[in-house]
Length: 367
Image (cartoon, rainbow, N blue to C red):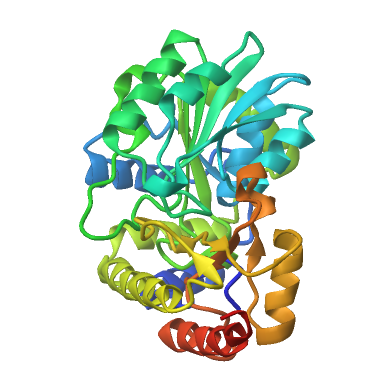
């Protein structure tokens, strides 16, 4: 299984214990306040203060959601009217396109530069803007490519948004997971766009809490008020027990995050080494710099990326995701996740080696 983006590592013990203690008490079975527990919102503020030195008001700027997916969905619902255009940096996360289409918005795909590590084409962003453009939607680090957009590009996107009065939706779920000791520059570090920024985040990957569904949105107070009208109508509140877990995650030791990053970097290096041995099947240009995905180009004969996915799965039992699911530029590619696998079967490096042993054997016919 190299398809779904789930870290194999278990949720740290102190987080689970906080959730268990909450469940044993009287509060976990009740709704929390609409925007999330006060201490949970303060934990989000603490996170951004620790990582980026940026301060937010937990009452005016932070709302707790049922995972980052809900944060993304209500953000799109709040700003996109039928016929509005939203610039999507392509290849882009599949669900973000679906959110746009659900609101009858029009995704406008701006291709990245694959040969240079899927880097952003800023001139193409400018050319894509029309009178109907409402927002720019970016995932950084990128799912599915693993690209990390550098500071100068983030600042330029901010300048473009201000120049054309656009919203910025920034899904930074993987901001903690950057390799080779490279710095990560967050949109929140540009205060000039705080009035138009929806900063979307999650505990799922950083603290291995995918099943607990705990995310957030950080934004200006007037935007937050509109978002949480939708939150009230769709969700009411994020899981109360999970909020206790996130408080413990931020206030507790961060050793598990450091270990997770180290493990993922080893897996990133291993999957690239194994891909280098089968260039007749897949090719990539640069190692991913963040997240735990790689999107190599399919080199063996195939009709399209969907058929290529089925061919690989049938022949090798390796499950991937067809690139077309990430927008037009993804066609001809397959996404591999090196997050670690499922709760059953091989995990981590063992999973990667087993999968690529199968791929190497199958690939001999194309030599």
